[in-house]
Amino acid sequence: MYPKDLKEKPTLGFIGLGAIGLPIAANLIRADFPLQVHTRSRKAEKSPELKGAKPCSTPKEVAQGCEVLLICVSDDKAVEEVLFGFHGAESNLTSGKTVIDLSTISPTKAKSFAAKLARKNVKYIDAPVTGGTEGAKKGTLTIFLGTNDDSLKEVSSILQPIGSSFYPFGTVGKGQEVKAINQILVAGSYAAVAEAISLGEALNLPMDIVVEALQKGAASSWALSNRSQSMLQDNYPLGFKLHLHHKDLCIALKTAEDSGLKLPITSNVKELEERLIKEGYKDLDVSVLKRSIKNQFRNPTDN
Image 1 (cartoon, rainbow, N blue to C red):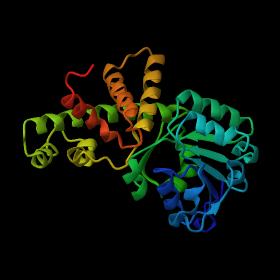
Image 2: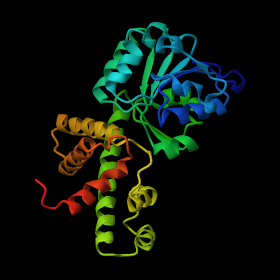
Image 3: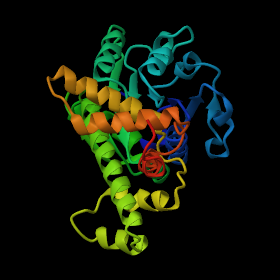
């Protein structure tokens, strides 16, 4: 697909420089990939971490001359606009090029985008990531790929600077299906940690010691290790925005519904998130779920 000699690294395009996308792009720059970048606000294109990257005014311009285009945007609509909008990349994606979509979108849309690009012999790989902003900055993301082993080998040198674990699941859309499962587990674990910490606080337990003890046993989890302090301090610096996780839960619940399943725990967490979003917390980290329990405690008789 492109020269394998590391001295001849392919020119990459990268669209979407948000909390996850910017550190991913920065890691590609540090790995010496020639990079053309674009983001909707245009501000992050001038970030010091992207020194050496070429800013582009549109997705169409990014796609011009790049061998592989990476996308990391918010939702189905944003990916569709990037690829097929008025200034979309599709018009400059020629035969043999590859799109790696790091966004979390619906499996159905991933399949639709792949089918459209296949008409031009352009390969589309859904490759949603997990690991939060911490993993994006460290280059240790886990990536779920809707592709096979052979296609993974073709793009592995591009993925290595941004992730530490790569799992191909065979066909387009399967990466998004696995990400849906991931987000269900995230929802349950964050909500459980929020409830457990709320109970500990109500019992006036020494919560720093309690958390340390819990991390040594069966209750240990990523959410407990990485987000318990935020909940204890009632301070929620950005790791993954609440409204984006809510979007992901909607995808997961629709995927489950299409498979004939109802997910009551996930549905309950989705409702908690909707309430918090209405209260103005949409841009805080998902661990702000703790506020849903705190608010109930403060207002037990509210209708």
